[in-house]
Length: 314
Image (cartoon, rainbow, N blue to C red; front, side, top):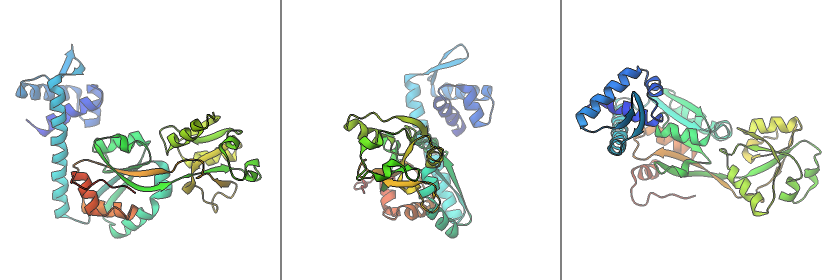
């Protein structure tokens, strides 16, 4: 039995039973993947996958158990590698942060700058995607840490730690009628076309909940992937924007005005996601603490290993 064989079987399952796609991800050939999985099945004495001709069509019942164990073995193998790297060279390596545009653009720069000054030899990469994508990247071992507002707490395989709370503002052009509405109400907001985040992003569920609780139907004319796009289309006159308050900078956004909307919507919590049982390098814990000072290494380690008392709330 080889780690390579386990990796092939897990990747086929991860790619929805598409052997060709799994081979591309693994940078090998489709026949090679199929052959190694057959050898693994022969050694174990069970079929991991159900086949129809040459096509893989399902995971067998024993196959589900094999895949689950293989994922744990591969995770621990990765942990062993990181542990060796930790002691071989504490100031070099890589740290992969998977996050959304809003976090990368407005929340992370201060922590990234401080981290790079302290660890210039560490290759830090920021991988952007929607919340579901970044969670999947961490689970697949393609990223070390996920930072997002939505989705992380919905993955039981990830430890979800709260970083900070934030709320929203309504962005309008200068001299817009809403600037005279005090206090701002949801009823007033619904009189205008709305540009806000896509459903997968940045607390959209909290926005929807607020309107639904008042039996209001907002006219969302455009769903955007990030705050910069929202601001661009507000400037073009397509509607008013609802976005994260932290994404509005009066110095940069001089052609727009922001109206505080924190009294209209529930606060959202940005969370940090780490695969349960993962081994993080020492500098990864330092990055986390730079970003969220209330999460020191000991607290994060307890959460990742599942020690008693590891549940943390803001």
